[in-house]
Length: 249
Ligand SMILES: Cc1cc2nc3c(=O)[nH]c(=O)nc-3n(C[C@H](O)[C@H](O)[C@H](O)COP(=O)(O)OP(=O)(O)OC[C@H]3O[C@@H](n4cnc5c(N)ncnc54)[C@H](O)[C@@H]3O)c2cc1C
Image (cartoon, rainbow, N blue to C red):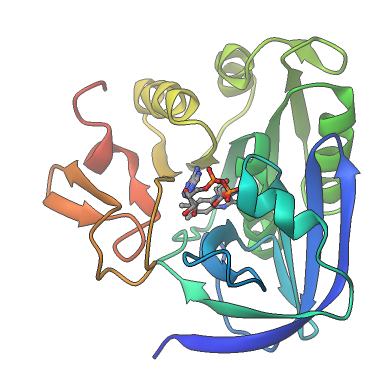
């Protein structure tokens, strides 16, 4: 049974550029890679908005969101103390393995990887951000949780100038990993999956697609996989890379 929860907003503020951190009081069970369908507190919005879980502890849930459209813009003005309705935790989540794990995230794809880092024993992270301000945000979130942290920024204002995928071959040459978990733009994840395959490392990717219900009923987030049609909201959002990126690898 999926849980509908009314959750009080404890914090909702801008933490870098157009990225906000939303913390709510909610007694929820969940695992890294799962997401929450957030009902915006206005009749203007019929569909809930899906956000990954960045942290789940002490009766609090943390999410990060980038302002990209009408709904997320509206959310920035929702005040602390307001109750919002959550549906979750939804989806399958990552399979967390033993051994050394590398997390590779781009932009808001880093948010669910924070939760994964907090549950893994031995983990490094490769952070991809637009600029130093965004990279600093993710760095401060991951630093207490990981062994090594590698940074790439689009404008070169922090870490290596370029995409995470340009830095990844070096990271894989100089470190040994048993698994890679990745979340971010699809083009980035396809390249990460291809590099993981070349190095014989298992890779899980967390996909994102516009979705309606989040429960597997409306089929709007269906995709083709080697195992036939799958729904990102219910069968995913996490898939083995070879199940979904078979044509490119
Ligand atoms: C499983 C999952 C996890 C996500 N986790 C995060 C996260 O942690 N942080 C974050 O900032 N964003 C995340 N997203 C994307 C986020 O849901 C969209 O950016 C957001 O719904 C946009 O809402 P909007 O009203 O501002 O945009 P609009 O473009 O005005 O939205 C219109 C409609 O499209 C849907 N939509 C728009 N963009 C997306 C998208 N990329 N994916 C899915 N639906 C979309 C909205 O739900 C809405 O129904 C996630 C998406 C999915 C599918």
